[in-house]
Length: 123
Image (cartoon, rainbow, N blue to C red; front, side):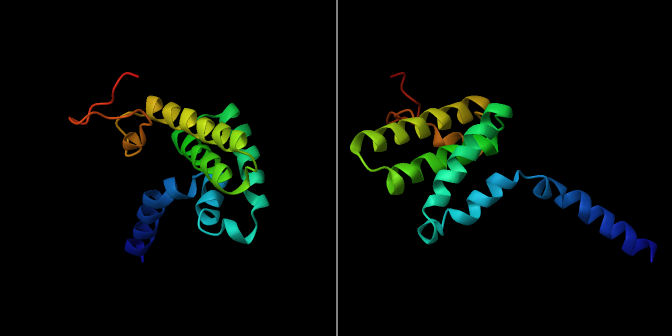
């Protein structure tokens, strides 16, 4: 019986970071493939993630905001200017995420153009 208790405790500790994930980030992951069901949800998530980034700009929240900005530009923006503004905002947020954690798995999302040798150019 004690072995089972220890196994359950070990499992809980191992998966606890997944449970600690911000609900907005998790919600975006669900809606990223279902945005067509309720396009207005993109607006809600974008506004909520903007507020979340102002309070706590952690890597996952920055990446989620960047993603929802690109979704907004693709789906919700009505004019070319709105699209470009949303894409630019997404690019800026992605850059902040890369600057925050350059060695993370998100680093390849670096929005700067890359040269043939793979280094980001300084443009």
